[in-house]
Amino acid sequence: MPCAAVIRFPGSNCEFETARVLRNSGIDSRIYNWNEIGRLSDNKADAYVLPGGFSFQDRIRAGVIASRENIMDFVFEEAMNGKPVLGICNGAQVLIESGLVPGWKPGSVQGALAGNLAPGRSGYLSRWVYLKPGKEAVAKCPWLSALEGDAFPLPIAHAEGRFVFREEDMDKVKSHIGLTYCTPDGSAADGWPDNPNGSVLNIAALMNAEGNVLAMMPHPERSYHLWQVPPDMQGFWGDKRRNSSLKDIEEQPGPGAIIFKGLAKYLGVK
Image (cartoon, rainbow, N blue to C red):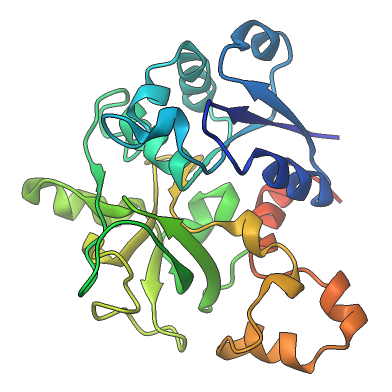
């Protein structure tokens, strides 16, 4: 059975549910602390996940301290060797600060996740959003390989999720888009509320050039089960939740399962 390593930093708070949904997807998972680089290097995984949370209390900038930890040097090397790496929310911030995405010059920080821009409010925002994959994402990214192009919902929960880049890099960014915010019918988001944080080009997830590293702000591990979908959600997933029996709601997978199904497929899980 393939194995994924979930890296826990001080302040991570999504490591257990992330490890659990990986196991539910047919992938063995183990949690490694930020200071267990020796244990991790002795047990190399087939994939690596940086979970959500508030590593090192988001001091200085979200993800920046965690990105300087020695264990990230190991993750960096594994990513350069083609291993799938996923950063969720705070994990995405760590990947940006590590220079793994967009990765034009690996190790060099070439983008940022800035504070949310939303009318009449600032800071932390938790809600559901709709997403669709970028043009090259399904073919290039193991984590997105099970998507079919339709809009699907996932929850967000962050204060610094707005992807920003230098103006001269904007054209290059387009080929690195993993997921974009959209309307329930799949149309491009036109500002708030479909784009919840003001991210440029409606970017919700960004990948490196090879596609094996994905930094995403939405939380697939918090929507792995159908019962986690709000009953009033629009579109296919809301209809499925409302029209399912109580037993089906408890047992059926939710939209977040698609992300982990993609990795399982890539790693040969049957």
